[in-house]
Length: 129
Image (cartoon, rainbow, N blue to C red; front, side):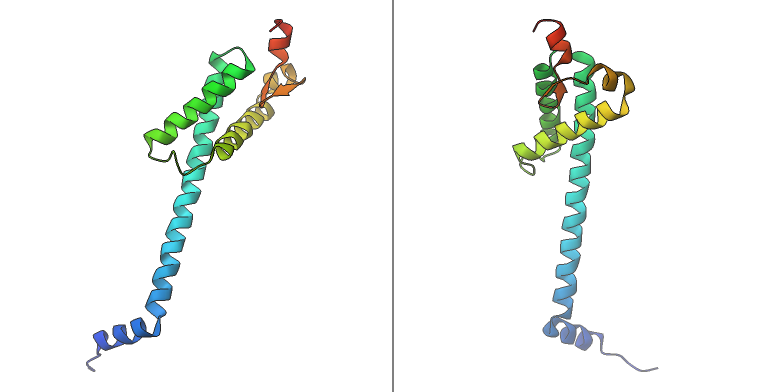
């Protein structure tokens, strides 16, 4: 059996840049995968926050504030508060509201008028608020 110089092969690969390129591509893949998982988690938390707000608050402004606070609390608890901008957080909330209204037929039928911040203002208008 031949004696292969593994150390020599590794040194040759390192000096040629092959190992560096493979390592760099691996790190970028891990970063992209982690970022994607963080986005999916934030969107899931936004869904939960919107569902909570719809069930526990009356006005559209209170619902939006509660859902946003819920999402920020989850981000802070998971050491992710600076990974997303305020615009991204608002987009997550708006997306969750749209998803809830598309999915839930009673909400979809009940709230077909004007919207403020993604939450419907129909109920507020009917109550004179």
